[in-house]
Length: 432
Image (cartoon, rainbow, N blue to C red; front, top):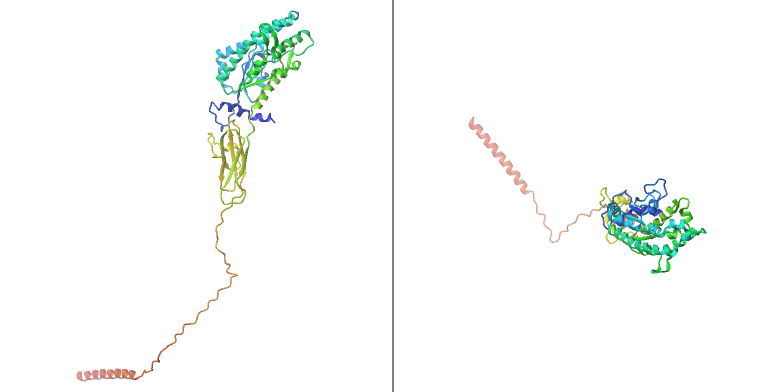
């Protein structure tokens, strides 16, 4: 399961750079993080390819989380710590690469010790070996290695304060052997590299050189890859051997070295980002519902919500501008029954979404008038009240009416008509 989580490697490595450089999290970034490998022939992958003039694609730097990095391999065969430090101070290529790195591996110091020990001389004439004399030759070389390693790490940190550094300690290329020569080389190697030497004339007790690497691994941002332990007892499996090379790792050995860095990388991965959404009430309500947001993010860079069941990319437009509604104090209110999506982005560049469906908001009831069915309601019968009867009170009026006046009127009209007729006849006689 841990290796599946390496899919978030890109955001993790780039996240280290965000503390000092701007980074648009919302935009899809197709660039891979950059791994820069500093070192000697082991980083170079010497002897893995025939007629090799360039770092091998099968060397351990290219095998760390395969496919996840753009690898810049600056390993050079034969280099000591002095060669690397000088190049970092004089060759702009190294400075440029270090500044651009998201992840750095450092494997140096092997040749410092091998050259001081004189392995070829021991193999050529094992009977003439004086172990204490060899230890005394190694001590100045170890002291110079200590100074150079400190300067190398200091310079890397000055040029790139955020990139994690995987520092490989020294493995003993010689395993236990019944062969007197290789048995001797194994013992000398363990003394110089791991166990240390007691009561060295002039110098006293001398610790193994890997104590220097262990101390450096305590510096924040530096992670020790224990190559010594990984190879101890497995030299026959991991080293080419006498027929091809006595000290360089074969293909299996490079896979082992890469695995050490990959495990360190996994240890740097943040906890998988999660979101938990809880409504303040699940009872029916006519008011808004508050949704509380709980996340395990150590530092939240963005927290938003939108209506609908959405993916993370829907929270940004094509230009990387946020489209969601900001969530303040880890809660927000909704007023409708809907599915809502919450988006969270943390400081490591991890983003995730979670949905919640609200179903308990009811519309407020509006009173309606009662409905009367005219077919079933009996008609109301209206009865008219009888007209009021006025009852007279007091004395009765006597009936004194008489037709005499009518006769007078009729007689007067007859007299008038007769008078008119008489006058008309008189005029007719006079005219005659």
